[in-house]
Length: 254
Image (cartoon, rainbow, N blue to C red):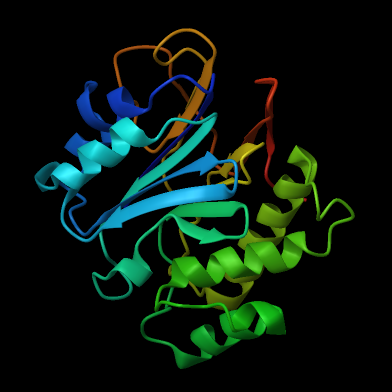
């Protein structure tokens, strides 16, 4: 599987500590999740992303990117490749316009079932299908999420509720396509458009902190980073944070 991290904080705050040097930093977690890394943050022209295919703990480019990533929102990911080659095009976070997504989990039966792969593809709107660049189930889930978000009234400036609804529809649709018997998809997603930071828990641990690192900061992570201030997001739960650091906790279900 993988590990993900996102923070929404004052724009001057660096993400280097939780990414690189804190207790159980994302770089430390990469010892068990060694198949590449990615860090996304926002400039005036939209998302900026750095990726590598080495393990983050063995790649100084990860440290340099972690020190460079300085914006209100930072999204990062270390990969344990379950679907798709170790390659840049399969490395999270995925980026489309202003949106970025990182995924922890796997779509059930994706590797073994052509029917599942074709059904996921059909769930993506036709214009978005042409934007697929890699092989992963995660990238396809991202485009399904964006296809659902396109149908929301606030598509040009989504609200936290718009994102919750689109994530809920994505999880429900993917599970309906892929899950059979004891084979269940794990679909923890972390998404942002540079204004909002939202995440859902479906099948894997997820944690939230409004205090990690102190000060004006909200963070979401697969594992607690640092010593204090984390709470578990309930299974089937959603968390959304807006630019005023208002936190919405809600069930993901529609």
